[in-house]
Length: 187
Image 1 (cartoon, rainbow, N blue to C red):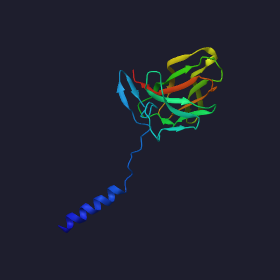
Image 2 (cartoon, rainbow, N blue to C red):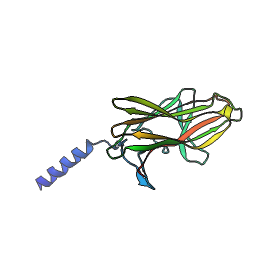
Image 3 (tube, one colour):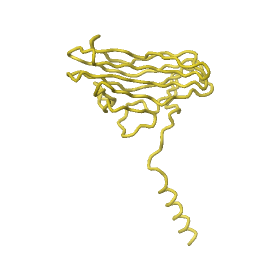
Image 4 (cartoon, one colour):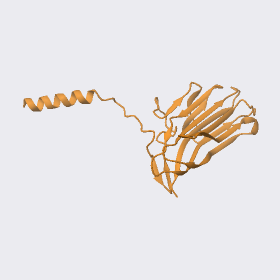
């Protein structure tokens, strides 16, 4: 009986010492389908208080897109989101796609309502390459949809970082984004 009580007491102490949450593996595949592997365990379409794979600046607020799905809205001129560098695993060299869903609406068509997204690939030994995913301001009109860039010649050990920045005019316009994905095309 004493061994049982001791064992249960030890188990309670060990479990109490574990954190109440699990951290997200930012290099894990969230799903595999239709010839793609999605390496986006946190695609920003959730409402969470903490993020493991993203650094979100003070110029962003959780918001809802026009279809009521969760995302983020730029709330000042320095809105910034950066995804932790994704390291390309073995046997996944070649073709990647990086994209996000965007919405820019502005009845005043202000160029201050702006969103810029880029994928930065680091190739160890040779340096960085920058790939524009999206650049738009409201003076070009309202815009919405999934935007992406294709990355070729990505090799094992390379890293992919996604950077999103934007601004707002505070005059009734909205700059929003969600569903940020890193896809590997294995066909």
